[in-house]
Amino acid sequence: MLPYDSLRERLVQPFLLLGFIVSATLSLTTFALLAQIEERAVERTLTVELESFRHRRAINPLASPAESSLLRGFFLPADQLTRYPELSGDTSILEMRTLDDGEYSVLFAQVEGRPFALLYDRSYIKSNMASLALLLLLATAGMTLLSFAVGYRLSRRVVQPIVRLLNDVSFKAGQRNMPPENIGFSDQGYPPDEIGRLVRELDRFSHRLYEFVQRESYFAADVSHELRTPVAVIAGAAEVLAEVPGLDEPVRQRISAIHRNAVRMSQVLEAMLILAKEERSDADPSCNLAEVLEDAVADCSPALQGRPVSIQIGIGERVVLPVERSLAYVLVSNVLRNACACTREGVIRVTLERSALAIADTGMGIAEDRFPELLQRHAKGEGSTGHGLGLSIVARISERLRWQIAVESRPGQGTNFRFVFPCAAASGAAD
Image (cartoon, rainbow, N blue to C red; front, side, top):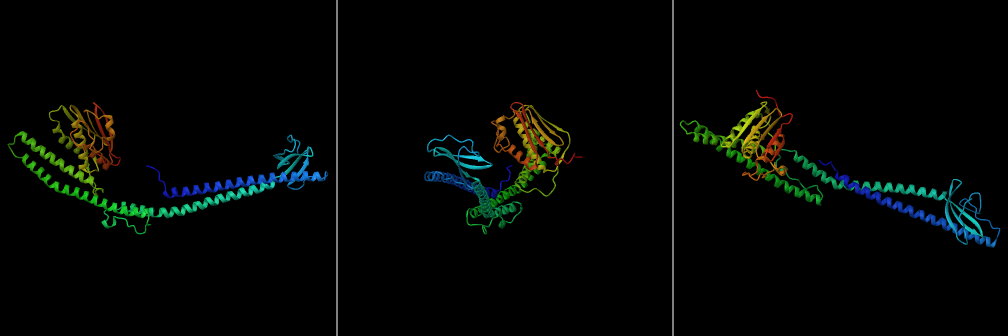
């Protein structure tokens, strides 16, 4: 099962991410541009001051270089600068130097043929840039929070009708025997957009689905009701005919077959009706599984006449299970009939334990490529003459009873069906 992924979070996250990316990009771009502008301003200030000093020296050879808190100039060598680049002509070199625990922009040039250095104190620039960085950081955080608020409010408006619809669907899904007028979903209160259209389409689909379920339910109940009476009449007539004296043995066998199949049809009808119902019966069912096995084996034995195949029953414990007898009978009967159809000679073993039931045969086995579709509807072997429904019914009944199915088979070595009962299913041995 996939983890829950909130639609609201998925709507908020893009807004939050977009706001952060946009604000961070603008802040970084602004910081880089201002830093570049500051560097160009410092370079221009030093160049202008150097030209001004050269001009003053040309007029007055005793003119002194600039001396202020930001800008200082002196001839080299000096105590502050013992190392400086080689200079020639009118070329100038701008470098970053750390002097006396301070950071400076230093412009090296020649004045009157002597090396000269002009220093610009960068502490003021660093302070301004630090303040700018803090301001941009706060702006980025504020823009991100604003994006989150906008995304949160927008997602709330978008998700709120969906949450309402989800609550309506969850409420209706948990109700049983709901009146037809409460099946649909009213589009009142929903926005006139895709969500409102979804509600209207869902309302139309729910009414169609309700009508379909009603038709299927009525069909299952009507068929079961209409067939039970003639099946009971056939079974009763077969019992009466079996007691008529002087009947030939072949006739008695035919009558016995009629009675046996009538009883089986009655069990099948009841099982199909139970499977067609969504809700479980309020009554507490009880089934002696050993008796079910004996009845199913008796019903399947005539199909083995003329073949060297025997059915062996091993009952370790006569288990009583809280399940419907008809469901257990149809499950066992279908697996046994499948084993009888696939076994030309050998043994079919039915083993009942306290926690499991196993039905194994020595028949043709099942090819490995058939396992993925073995329990699906209309899946059958190449030599099968049926409709491929028996094992799919077994799978549905097992799911209904919460029995675990394990199938082992190899071509030419037979098949083993094992049904494991839930821990709370077995109620003990029968008296």
